[in-house]
Length: 146
Image (cartoon, rainbow, N blue to C red; front, side, top):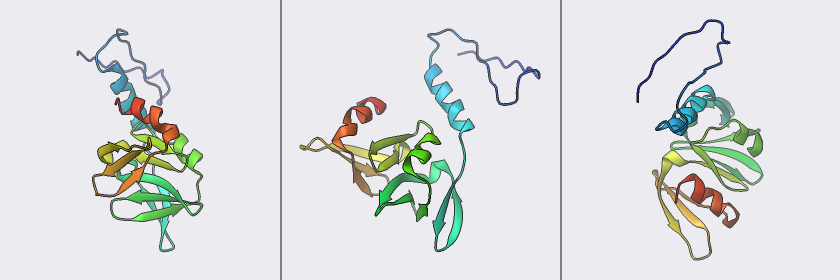
């Protein structure tokens, strides 16, 4: 793939224009990566009465537990006052909703195991695990190209 960058100071700073053949290799991945960079924001999470700002890449999952949204990282669990649908609208393609109450970071998936009842057991790289909802099974398969 050949790449040329042409700077145009008349464009707004937040605009990128790409000219390419519609069948260019890796175009969807490039677009997803650019969108990911533009959405790279921090999530506020509370732990021991202190507020921390958590990077997208450090988050394993968002999970509702006892009506409280929890942000789970490899070394801590934070709570947030945001709603799951608000969080989902701020996430990039590395996150996948697997149930009504959970969104996971696919970069932390170690392996998947299909259960007889139609759910998927998802094992993370930190040995934690969760289960998908049957309702989200087709979306999960499509997103993970299963």
